[in-house]
Image (cartoon, rainbow, N blue to C red; front, side, top):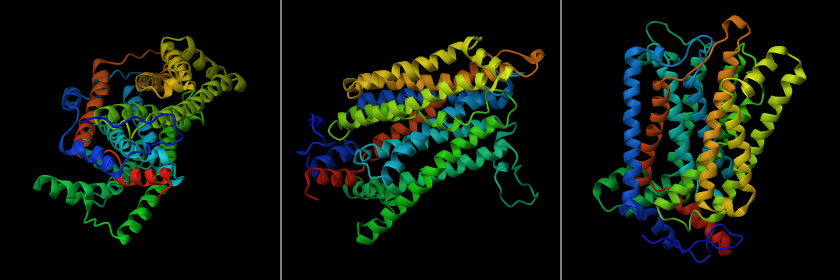
Length: 450
């Protein structure tokens, strides 16, 4: 499939000469004939290999217990919670772009909302597996849910495990509803364009009987806005919830009110990276234009400066408080055994990010992808820096220790990308990745004819 002409230096997000037929052909064409099949097969194959690595690591974990991880005394929280927080932070960006920009009616969200919502769903699933796997008996994870049972068993509401359950379940429910309800009109169009009875039946079930009547549209708009209103405070509630997990601990360096912002800022990087990959795989350069990449770059730069403010505040507050142990923990972060994580976070989340001041970097897919990859690596180093050094420097000098992630810590983390990539690849192949009717509506508004 030949890509449509790129948007040139105009103030609009979509080319004015792009017709409704071209939009429909670019969005629904890959459902019948995928434009870059070889690249998609490589992507799916890599994801499948990583998924097998993950399943193998989980099998070993269930057989041997969490003692196979690198957790020890005094570092009792390691890669498990680090990756849990990392994946949840990744998911927040998709909700932010889809829900918040829907409510404030920003036109550049129309071609990005589907891939961002799907990213949120996959990231939440990857995060949700970690609290289950760390349980002594993970097959009984449903005991953390408040359900009527003959044993009179109820969850311990003082336990962080119960907090995780409520946060993940509510976030997962809203994410699924937001993604599926938003895609109903496109599922109906895919149903009407399906070339086989099986696809027609599947898309028909997903369309939920959509016929495009005025009543259907009114209910759809009302429902999507209600879900968006629910999703936005849920982002801050979930990020504040797992920040509260740290605040409840006794370790110095974990009592910062900036943690919720820490864990949200920078997550736009994966949205930018996925937008670049999706626009190339589906050949939709005229739908996800350089202007869209430019806006993602600006948003990433803005959230990066939020993170920079957090770093400066964390450097200032221990000395301002005068607490000797807070200062000791700060010095351990900067110059201790794991100082690499602090400086890697500074370089990736502050230094590399400054390249986005230049428009030619923001609008260049390879350059923006490199910056986004650096930020994602910086986010991981940031979590390590925030979680590990405070545990290594306990209040008692006699309990000071070290931490080294084990092989199984790494395989679970690397394999979790397979949990993300395999279903995401299948969605790319069989689900419309751009909201067609919203793009057409935005196109008519930019032309001034509707």
